[in-house]
Length: 289
Image (cartoon, rainbow, N blue to C red; front, side, top):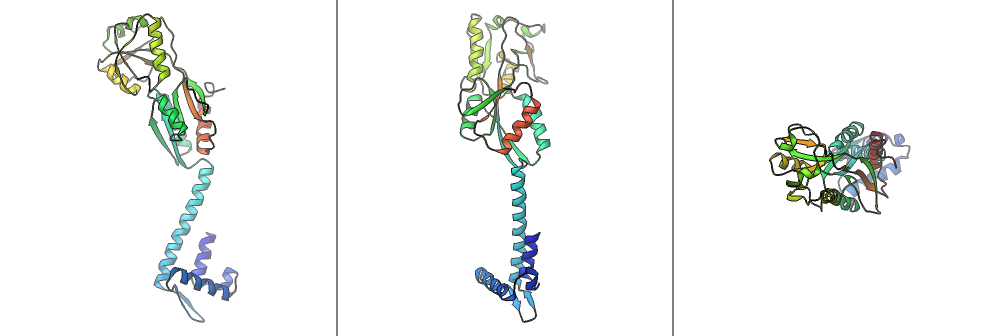
């Protein structure tokens, strides 16, 4: 408001004393302003100063500029407090548990825009290196000396079956060997090499190679394809409401999916650090070093 008062005083008939300067310097500043703009802004006499139509238009725009300056200052202060800006977050198709942190962050920082991108683990690592995302929720292991990756979620891996599949009827755990003759739907290795290698390894250890007939890029599509009868899959226990699939634990093997939150080692953004601080509060045990 102080800047606006000064501008008003300078462009209207208020006396030079209001600006705490003598009349001659004020007159020179007015002439310099008119020369710079290229039009007459004032009608002046010895006793009276009045804005021309051009001066009135100039004053209106000057007010708007001051409003923009004030808005820019407020935005800068909010950004410094991690209250304004855009946060880019990558997540895999299994990150359904991301909803609580997203909801909590939006409630705490309503002026921060969240951009969520569905990306495989390999793509997230590259996007973090290239600064195309700020935080990644991915599947370990991750090999990068530029990133910090902290585990936060380790769900049990079981069989995902069509609801009408014979192995789904009893509700009891099944054996991995029961799936030896089944067609598998899975995410490709280039999307998540850690998970892909784990699945193929446990199948090989059980004495068979999985017959992978369909590969797709996210877990939600895997579930849809299993639901349609395209095959079976292995994955974490996901919310399956409304899906014609069943999850069955495995009795003869124990498989865990190690999910991690990843960010750049040299990250300086207050937005990122505020997000991580809130995240670590929601997942206090899993993310401890």
